[in-house]
Every structure is written in C-alpha cells, then in structure tokens.
Amino acid sequence: MATHLKRTEDELSYFVTFTCYKWLSLFEITDTYSEVYKWFKLIENKGARVVGFVIMPNHVHCLIYISSGGEHLNRLVANGKRFMAYEIVEKLKRLNREDILSLLRLGVQDNERRKGKKHKVFRLSFDSKICEDDEMTASLLHYMHANPMNGKWNLVKDYLDYEHSSARFYEKEEPHKYCNILHFRD
Image (cartoon, rainbow, N blue to C red; front, top):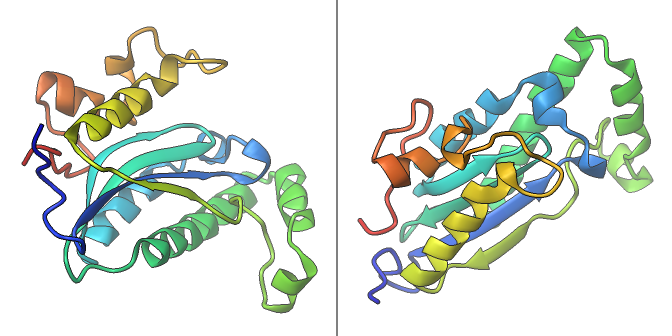
C-alpha cells in the first residue's frame, strides 16, 4: 500500500498522545475541549495539520502531519500543552474548584516551581510514534475512534456519535465543525 503523507524524511505523520496530570478528567470538568481545537488551528500556522483525533475527558490522541520546514513536534506539543494548561487553570478558578487546583499545585516539582510554574496540568512527557505507512495510519485511526466506547469510558454506544473525534470525517465524509482535517490519503 502506498504511503501518501510521508513524502520525504522531513515530512512525517506522528501519532501523539498526551494526558492530564493523574489522569484527571480536566477537559471534561472544565469543558475545555475547545482549547484543543484552538491548538489544532494554531499548529496549521506552524507547518502542521491534523490528520485525525479524539479528545477524551483526560487525554488527547491525534495524528499530526508536519510538512517540510514545519515546526518540530516537541515544540508544537509543548506550546499546545502550555496554552491549554493556562486555560484549564483559569476555568478551574472560575468554577471555584480549589480541590483540583490544590492537587495541581502539589504536583509541581521544586525545580519547576523555581521557574515560575504553579500548576501541573499535564503529565510531563507525551507519547509519539511515526506513522510508517497508510496501513499503520488506518489502524491508529481505528484505535483512536474506538476509544470513547472502550474500557471504562462508554461515552457513546456508537463511536460515530462522539463529537470530539474525526470518526465521522473518515466514515461519513463529513467535515468536522471545529477542525480542518487533512485526510491521510490526500
């Protein structure tokens, strides 16, 4: 099967996962799914595109294509997490969720605190994997899209009904209302 998005060594697609601190459902508690969509729009200005995604209550899976000359994946994700963390903390303050804010403050390491960090919103690292070919990309999309129905989640009975996913884009060819998705076969 031909690989469509991997055109050169500088143009790659990555499967990326990042998780909220202590697996707290911070996107759900603060209803900040929109902040992930804002990040998706911002990375387009940095030479990257979203190929697929699912935003879960406490973690994000996405496939990101970075074109030649685009910003490095580590920088894209780090800046996105920083941007989202700020919004999540502000929303927690408005919701008077001192219980969660206190927990997030306790998670900050001394060396991070000395640099001015006040809250630990996300786990420090993120997972990434290069998508080698279309078969791998399709498999990862299936894994992501099924996530809202798997394990403890049971967020929907049919994965096509989960709003914060690219599933309908791929299965029904419907554009997503909040995200401009690049089809992996384009």
